[in-house]
Image 1 (cartoon, one colour):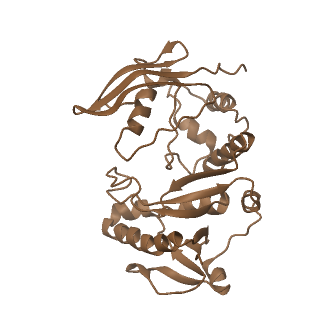
Image 2 (cartoon, rainbow, N blue to C red):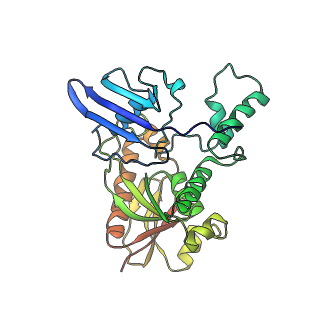
Length: 314
């Protein structure tokens, strides 16, 4: 199969408004194949809106002008499915219980019928992304492994990203399966989030440092580090700083060099059923982690029964 040509992306005079307020001032930008460009700014400044305009998914409430081109092809008025542009969000917007093939097949048009044909379409898509043979792998770990290989090939040996510290499955992926370390607690990083998933909760995030060539990461990726329970960590001298009770999370005093911080079973379900309880979890996990990480502590693991393992700083 011949890979598609690698063409530059160009924005020509792109400008975006919302309710007569300019979000993105006139922007001219050319991005060469393989080049990375970072757009930075506070929550609500128009970063995601710009990406939506490029992908063709901009909400009708916004008013946009200018041109989006790939090579010489003008994409400005093409529907999203004809642009061949995707957005990979940093938060978990895939189905973690499905394989890579099942996630891709979910988005196939209804006209693509039959298991063999759907499998073929998925295989072709993975081949175009330089991921042949990844059909049956888990989605989260596979994406990170591909990212690691690409980064090391570019001479990059450290990657950092954020995740919601209340989401246990993401913590397990980032800290246990990948061998990352939580190095900074960011309070309300994105401001209040009112989408149905976050239900108005504060947007605290834990910053993960992934040292790609480290022995810790190698051991995690090989599965060399055995799963460990909170009882086993306590047997080594750790004490519980935040515990889960029938009434909700409870902080308790401790001066240990290693502490355990409980995480809710399913914060998304808790937000839906009991928003007040979800809010208490946010504040108590923040109170447990933020001062200790700020003082030099590191979040180094997650027990099998759902508690962070925190090595307290000097």
